[in-house]
Image (cartoon, rainbow, N blue to C red):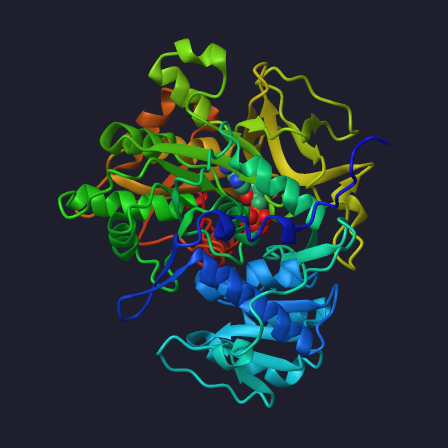
Length: 545
Ligand code: ADP
């Protein structure tokens, strides 16, 4: 062996930005103004936090949970808990008490850090989580109390601790982060990230042809830090030394735009519903906001509509980058840039947008493949549809303490997505397998229909779901949310769709609704939509009589 076998540990990179450019700021929106501290102070406080946790007896591999918004203290946990060899378990603040109780007990969390305004959400489970020894309350000058017997205030907890911690040299395959899937089917499942997986993911994410994150950027992560580790962005930004701008609990689109404009944000990340909300505000009144520094928007979690990506580019000159991933993939799997290959330099803008509307190209080191039901690979012809499998150094090989053999095939993760791969090696997600619509033995992609329908000016959001049909098994119906003061007829929607889809693929019905239910991570909640239709006794049009 000729090279050093330095383990890939987060403690090696989390303080790098602070060391290189100590005075760069971490800015958090507060009820009253903004909280500002430097990268150096953040890293010192992360060191203090590690000392305080060690003093409390937290050791390598112990689970420390956060129940928090995106803010500077959450970032300190990201840096300090992981670097000291403990495991940061980011709890999803939008889960109900039953799921929270299950997850905290399953993870055996020892300490929970919670923002004060979120404390009431923990109340119903306080006497049902015996592994938890301490609740550390993060105060922001708001209100919120807890009846938990052992509690501390965050600032007192770290106060007086040394600002340099002696990070342990541990195995790079040691765990550092734990996230549970939101459990739309069955119990939530835990994914335990390792130092090695997150280290490699952190570096890859920054690549010029990935998110192109740079030390020059001001990043505003809107994706919650409990959603697949905030898509890894807090780690990447800490390594590089980006300015980090955090919305805390103020995620209403107008607050977000104000924050991004005031803090000269150059890159931001969130699910499509966030960017749709921001787009609507700017469309109404573009004048008050200066988004001239904003350069790239990462959009993932579900498929962003092409019309929206085009709007950001044509109106504001902002490149929307589509990313595909899962909690199980750390999370970045594939990503689509406007120009992703040298040979694409000559493409027309329309062709480039065709490409960004695909889920993208695989990150280096990962492999994707689509398979039929007997696990035979399906051709990469852009037409054949198969179950998507993925493997590589930051892909889960099992769930934490929860064997789910059907979710793994040999060394592949079975994603639960159905997809196509085209001859240019672009991944195209057709649907989650449970959301696909099967009509007369043929599949209809709800994602494709939704993306096409929202291109209509009158429509701001669309969800296409299957409804049972005696002859065809299932038929699609579209639920649409209209833009203010607009109307649309079923015929107009169908007329618009017929340019791209075969007649048998068109929705049987178009139902205007006031709003669509979202999941705890801000995606269309199709399970609830289907359940609501059933509860309302909905009947497809030709079955209504
Ligand atoms: P949740 O189960 O809470 O939605 P995940 O974020 O892990 O949590 O969800 C991953 C799933 O989100 C993927 O399997 C896929 O179905 C969907 N998804 C993520 N990114 C995209 C994308 N760019 N296009 C289409 N679907 C996506």
